[in-house]
Length: 237
Length: 237
Image (cartoon, rainbow over all chains, first blue to last red; front, side, top):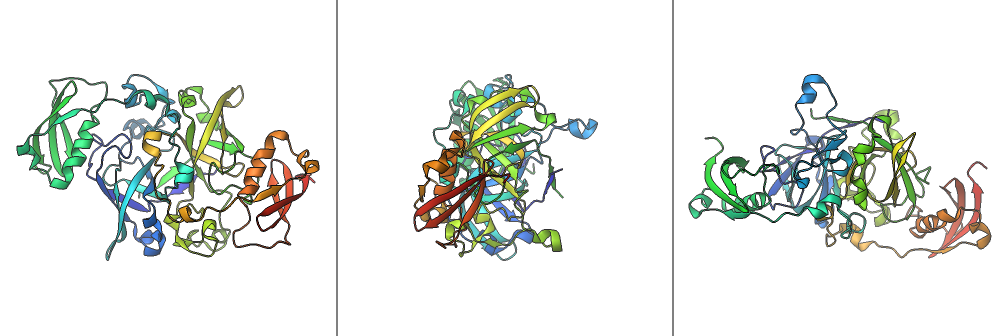
């Protein structure tokens, strides 16, 4: 009855191999993502004119991001209310009033900046985007141009998100660690950490967190509004 | 392989029983739509806090709007390029550079103004929205809050849509016909007609068009930038 079966048209490669550290919305961290089409859709003609848009919409699947419980007992993978991180993690909001992944149909929606389109012999058109809040390997079900005359409502009321803008953390990134990260990955990591990737109900100054980013393991601790990067190792180690 | 099956969570009721006349994007015509949840999702808790957002996203299915050819011969219901009406209907653009319904995964994306939420004993929460570009009876697969800090890019380049803003038509709506339409439906109809619902490659001053809207059949003709409403009858006649 009006069920719709979506097939991935593309997959995105990002610097986020796991859920922890993924920005909570698009545009919050200036990291680069690479969208590679599936063979059937990787046709130069299919993106003709797309390069004239500065943003695109991605409709994608929360595939790597589901509660495990649904596999075990077959219970539905959504509840009427969720606890959005922006509300500190202990206030409930209706699932349709949030962008939570735990929704009846687990589709995500993100606007990302389209930096350029590369045409690669083996992959066809490849979209280079900035600001994606997607895990590495996320399936993409649709790509649409961002139409400012229809999609942009700068004066829209943002509900609870209007009241919860938090001060960014101050990042302490020692020079001897900074050189362990490729130059072009530094500012993205700073963005990610500034937004505070910790679960918002945790504030434990003693705790050391590990973040996987751009092929590295980043270890850090926090103290109030300060965040200290204490170690960087290759993800293989 | 990463296929995703979407179930309708709701259906929308609008004044557009057929494709002809539906605004080409959301927000272009100030018409009212009513979103009624499916039993399983029509829970007051599931929309808690949604009333604090002024816009919501609808992710929906182009269910009533597909090419018939795919039913007949099983060929895929998309082509790499389409002819967007904004380009006059005779210039091709890549399907992913347009919002055409004829895309690999036939999902639509629309931001609509959330006017209010009514709680009805039989239907649960009902969302009253304005500006929907959806056919009556369209299945809705997801509802998300519009987050201005992530979703609004007023300075985004709109590609070919930046170059094709057309002058609105001047509507001639005789008083004796106007009274045949419920008062609250008049401005929506004017919006629809002003945007010129005709296929953009047609400019035939002799031709009479019929538009189904709000339970009426509206007949009109055009001449240059003028549009003349010539008849209104009940849809049952």
